[in-house]
Image (cartoon, rainbow, N blue to C red):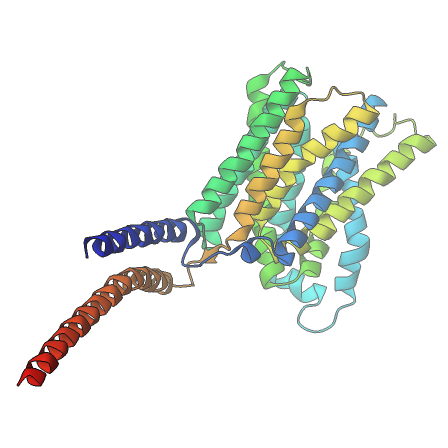
Length: 400
């Protein structure tokens, strides 16, 4: 009897511990039981692949920019103008030939000022981060550019009503840890490039650029999920071309005419424009599948792809921390995507009710083990008592 009580105590303790682990799991991931098949899904693999494809496109723009800079060409507004013009010639023309309520005339009548502000935000975000290279170092830009992540979380919480679970916050911290490892590898490899003439000004420009990128990405996520990807890109092409064209005329009127337009320079401009066009065209697809937050986490590996290319093209030094950084960032990205976010419209009562029901199930399961054992013990005792009484009665009756 003592051994059986001890065994029941052990079972109760073990199931109590499992119940505690389940409750911690639900605290981190929400009211959802995750199995291994729920983690490594085809959707997650596709998201990772598409995110890394975006990173490689950014890598292509970085490599071509480096070659242009080595050739003495520094015209960021001209490069942006070419990208927006290509968007104008494709997506804006598609909108121009549309009929019905979603044609370009109706869009411009009702929402032109919204898309103008969105395009202005995007153009200035690109311009300020390029301008920051003239005043601060590459290390500062890589670190401060991650400011887009917390800003994006806050804006998503306020405007898109996105709600994050503790696992999402941990995943973001893991990704930022990977960025720290990448910056440390840069310092060890002696790649602290850039100017340091006005560090505070340069750092401020990076922070402004990160905030503008966050605003642009939030607008993009809302538009592609609620309206249309073609509408978003068409309007960005239209207003982006106008804004970047005006800025190019103001700031680069002297730099553009002195460019030595040989075949190499032309091919570099073409390669940069195609990479940017692919990035702008492909990014809304990934944002619609996941979120702007997930896309920005995946883009943290873009600097690593640029470094890997730089090792072969520009003879950068290699460090094992680059590989560790890539693994850590990818791990954080996977952690962020295995548990879906939810919105405030999906009422808290539903989530809380699911959580309490799940917790009650754990308690009920643990309680059922003890109750079943007690019932079994009671039945066994009763059977033993009844058997003994029956044997005694039969013996006594036979004596009579």
